[in-house]
Image (cartoon, rainbow, N blue to C red; front, top):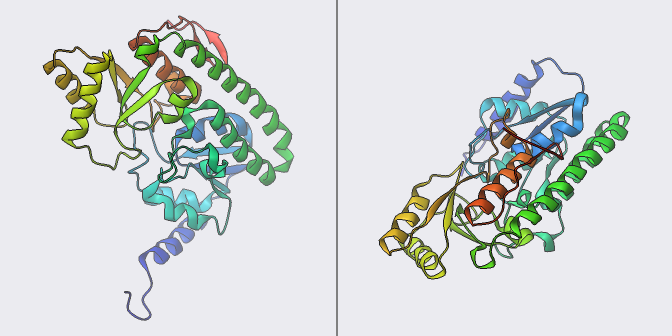
Length: 318
């Protein structure tokens, strides 16, 4: 318990950051801060020249474990709007993000969806961006908030959003076509943690995560043994690592299966909680999901087309 008259460190931090933010010149247009790139990259396309969109959690960084820095806090207190995923994805900064809602829109986009659309009754699954249709609905909520803040740009936001969302519809259809080519007995996706449930539900794959919904959870030897037994008994050909999670447990599965006389391939690295480098195809939401689909389908024995999606259009990539 704090002694009478004491001021909490959190209150002091907010006061200092308000003063710091006031010393920074205001910028033209909207200032939008988001937590993850899966929100930031689409909104950057939709906002265009009408503002700046900054995401806090960078390439290869795990949002489950991320704590905001002082510079992050300064950006947050200067923002016109803040968008985050919610459902405990940003567990280490959730209190700060909820506090912001007293002074500006600070919206947990996943929590805006109807409860029946969320996986997990007792422990909600936050990884809704793995289903492009659900992610389109979540992003539409952000577009509505931005339009209310900048009504003069609302028509342009709507036109840009329509173009972007049509690209997501093309992505969804393309991934569905690819995953259907995987032989039925091989439609099992084994990954480092349970981030692909929405992807599996939408595209017909059984998903097995070594860790739980959060990378903050522990993995026991018994869990590794259970998955190895499943790989061997069902003749699963490949397992997958994630770019923001250690490969240690995935490698343990491969070694365990080999000891039992079953060869399991390392299927590749998937983008789960973090996207790729900003200047790469996988640094876009469309590119991230397509990379995952192509990697999964190819390793599980399906057919992967030569052409890639880019901005909603098919293009060859050399």
